[in-house]
Image (cartoon, rainbow, N blue to C red):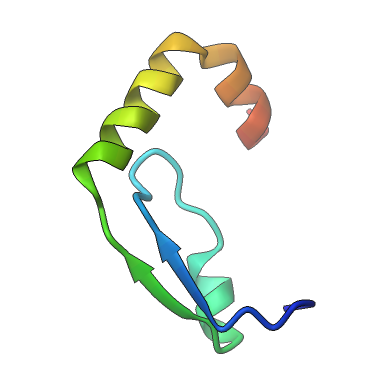
Length: 59
Protein backbone atom coordinates (compact mmCIF):
# COMPACT_ATOMS: atom_id res chain seq x y z
CA UNK A 1 0.00 0.00 0.00
CA UNK A 2 2.92 2.29 0.81
CA UNK A 3 4.19 2.19 -2.77
CA UNK A 4 0.75 2.06 -4.40
CA UNK A 5 1.55 -1.03 -6.47
CA UNK A 6 -1.58 -1.46 -8.59
CA UNK A 7 -1.15 -5.08 -9.72
CA UNK A 8 0.44 -8.25 -8.36
CA UNK A 9 1.03 -11.42 -10.39
CA UNK A 10 1.40 -14.57 -8.26
CA UNK A 11 3.16 -17.49 -9.92
CA UNK A 12 1.56 -20.03 -7.59
CA UNK A 13 -0.19 -20.00 -4.24
CA UNK A 14 -0.53 -23.72 -3.52
CA UNK A 15 2.50 -23.85 -1.25
CA UNK A 16 1.35 -20.88 0.82
CA UNK A 17 -1.75 -18.74 0.63
CA UNK A 18 -0.64 -15.19 1.30
CA UNK A 19 -2.51 -11.95 1.78
CA UNK A 20 -4.41 -12.05 -1.51
CA UNK A 21 -7.75 -11.10 0.07
CA UNK A 22 -6.21 -8.20 1.98
CA UNK A 23 -4.52 -6.85 -1.16
CA UNK A 24 -7.72 -7.17 -3.20
CA UNK A 25 -9.74 -5.43 -0.48
CA UNK A 26 -7.34 -2.49 -0.81
CA UNK A 27 -7.81 -2.19 -4.56
CA UNK A 28 -4.83 -4.19 -5.79
CA UNK A 29 -5.50 -6.18 -8.96
CA UNK A 30 -4.38 -9.79 -8.49
CA UNK A 31 -3.62 -12.49 -11.03
CA UNK A 32 -2.83 -16.01 -9.80
CA UNK A 33 -1.21 -17.98 -12.62
CA UNK A 34 -0.61 -21.45 -11.03
CA UNK A 35 2.36 -21.81 -13.36
CA UNK A 36 3.68 -25.40 -13.52
CA UNK A 37 7.31 -24.27 -13.28
CA UNK A 38 6.61 -22.10 -10.22
CA UNK A 39 4.74 -24.98 -8.57
CA UNK A 40 7.63 -27.35 -9.26
CA UNK A 41 10.25 -24.89 -7.98
CA UNK A 42 8.35 -24.28 -4.74
CA UNK A 43 7.70 -28.00 -4.18
CA UNK A 44 11.40 -28.76 -4.64
CA UNK A 45 12.44 -25.90 -2.35
CA UNK A 46 10.11 -27.02 0.44
CA UNK A 47 11.31 -30.63 0.10
CA UNK A 48 14.99 -29.64 0.15
CA UNK A 49 14.78 -26.96 2.84
CA UNK A 50 11.88 -27.78 5.18
CA UNK A 51 13.37 -25.97 8.19
CA UNK A 52 14.04 -22.83 6.19
CA UNK A 53 10.53 -22.94 4.72
CA UNK A 54 8.95 -23.38 8.15
CA UNK A 55 11.03 -20.49 9.50
CA UNK A 56 10.03 -18.26 6.60
CA UNK A 57 6.30 -18.83 6.98
CA UNK A 58 6.37 -18.73 10.78
CA UNK A 59 5.66 -22.33 11.73
